[in-house]
Length: 237
Image (cartoon, rainbow, N blue to C red; front, side, top):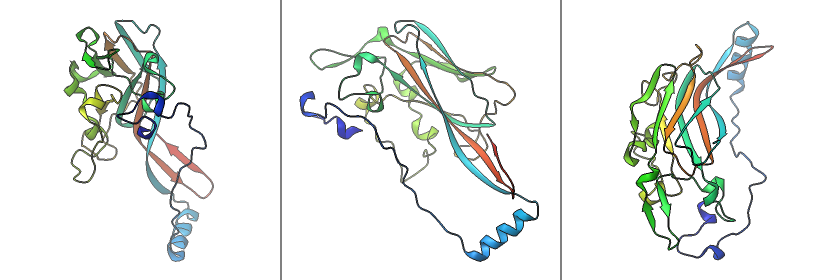
C-alpha cells in the first residue's frame, strides 16, 4: 500500500482513484509420498484422527458513537481457547482522501497535521489505553506514552528473530501507521500458551481522551486445532 502514496511528491501526482479487487492467496501445494499417504489412510480408517494445529484470526470493526467522546469502551464478543495476540488500529474520516484510504492509513489520535504540513504533538489528544479480559487488565497500569505502545515485534512473534523486523519509522508510527499490539502468551511464540476465554471471560478495550476517532479495527490472533477423521472434520477454536 505504500506504493499508492509516494513520499516527496504532491497529492496530485499519486494514484487518485484505486480500490482493492480480485484478492488472491498465493500458496504452494505439497504432495506427500504415497507410502506416507497410505499410513495416514490406515490411521484414519482405524478410527483415529489426524490433528493439525493452526493459527487463526478474528477481525472486528466498531464505530465510535461520538468521535469527540473522552472515554469509550469496545467489547469483543468472541470466546477462544488460546488467544496469542491482539492488534488495534484507529480510523479517522478526516484523514481519508482519494489516495489515503483505510487500508493504507492508520490514524494516530495524539498527532495533529497542520495546513503547512508540519506534524505537531497535541497533548490534548493524548490517549490512554488498557485491555481487560475477565478480571485481569493488560498492562496493570494504563498505557500513556508512545513508546509504551510499541510491542509489535513481541506480539508478531519475531521479538527474538535475527531475520525479521518491523518496517516502521518513528514518523510513520505516530502519523499514519499507528498499531497497538498486545502479546497474550505466557511464553513468547509458544503454541497454546495464550489466554483462555472459554469460561465466559469478556474482552473489553478501554480508552480515554481518544478524540477524532471514528472507528476501531480489532484483530485477534489465536491458536486452533483441526481433527481429521474418516467421516468428519472437527474444528476447535
